Length: 246
Image 1 (cartoon, rainbow, N blue to C red):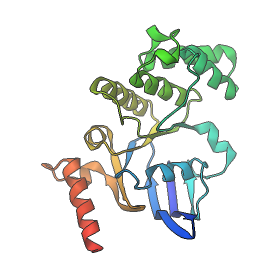
Image 2 (image 1 turned 180 degrees about the horizontal axis):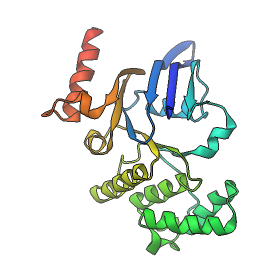
Image 3 (image 1 turned 120 degrees about the vertical axis):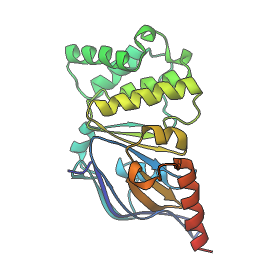
C-alpha cells in the first residue's frame, strides 16, 4: 500500500489571460511508515501540491490517492493530519483548550479525549505549559502545539508545510525531535521544506521540485554519494536541470 500516489497531477492558474503552471505532470509515490521530504526553492509548488492532496485546491488535470482512497473522499479526512505553514490558533486558548476543541470536532468521547490530550502534551513537551494562553507561546511552542493538534485524531499520515522554517536552533531541534517521534509511532510524515540541512537529518526519502516539476524522487541513501551533502546534491541538480533548458 502507498501512503500517497499521484498520476499526471497538474495545477494551472489563469490570471489576466496568462497561464501559470504551478505544478506540471506530477507523478509521485510515497511509501508508508517513513519521513518524506518534499523539497524545493520558494515558489516551486510545494504548498500547491499539498493543498491538492488535501482537497484544498482542485487539480487542473490528473488525480491522486491518499492511503489508497482518491482525493476528495471524505472518509480519508479521519486518517490524516495537517499543519499549514502559518497556522492560526485562538490566542486566548490554552493548550488543553485547543486540543479539546479539535477533539470535539472529531467527536472523540470525553474520557478518551482528555487522555489523548495529556499524552500529546507530554509527547511535544508542553505539559508544564498546559494552562498558559497561546498568545504567550514562542514560535517553536506554537509549532509543537500545532503538531499535537495534527495528531488528535490518531492519523496514519500527517502533512507539515514548512514546519521548521523561521525557528531558532532550539525550536528547530524540538520540532525535529517531535517529527522523528511521530515516525517511531508507525505514522507516515510528508513535509515540505527548503531547509536542506534539517531535511537531511530527518528524511528517509525525498522529492525535489523545481518550477512545478518533480526532478527526482527516491531514498536519500540511494541518491547521495557518501561524501556529498543534501545541499550540494540539491544545488548541483537544480543547476543541471536549469542549464538543460537554456
